[in-house]
Amino acid sequence: MIPSNKSQAKIIAYFQAEKAGSLFALIIGVIGLLIGAVFVATQIRFVDAAYPVLLFSLVALVAGGAVWLRSDGQLARVLASYQKNPATFRTLEEARMERVLRNFRYYRWAELALVLLGIWLLTTQFGKAFGVGLLIEVLILLVFDGIAENRAQQYMRYVQSIPSKHGRSSRLTKETGRAQKRVPSRSQ
Image (tube, rainbow, N blue to C red):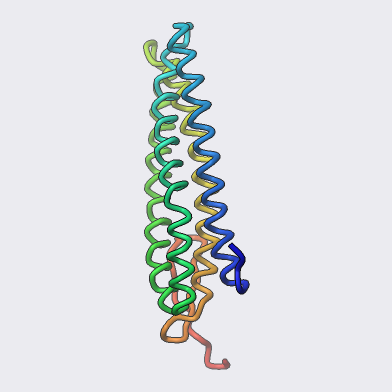
């Protein structure tokens, strides 16, 4: 797809990066399934580490597959919306991205809770291997989601730079991840 202007190029770049990230998730999922299957099949000493690896690998496959499958259609819809009316595009895309960024905050809290669970399991007699597998998987997920969240924040800043129906733009605050309206100063 050849963009007709810089704005469309930024939209395309965001969705291409999302699709590349989903491909990475698919690859990680397949590798994790293979590693988990080998652990289970060979019944090695740390077989319990395989269970969280298998679970999170399935999650990576489902999430990565879903993003991969919807990216092209979503890109086409978003570009059509931008071409039809940039202000409406901004309103719709800003609302969607606010939900995406809010979900990343929820994911981070859940992932941190799982890190704590993994650490606790390391202190138990029965859960050491499971805890190791859980920690490895959750730490990979934290890094992956952190990269995706950063990409989403950059895209949100771009979306918010487009003038709204009221001629104003807003910005995403780094501290809260929430949009704040930019109000022109009196000197402007």
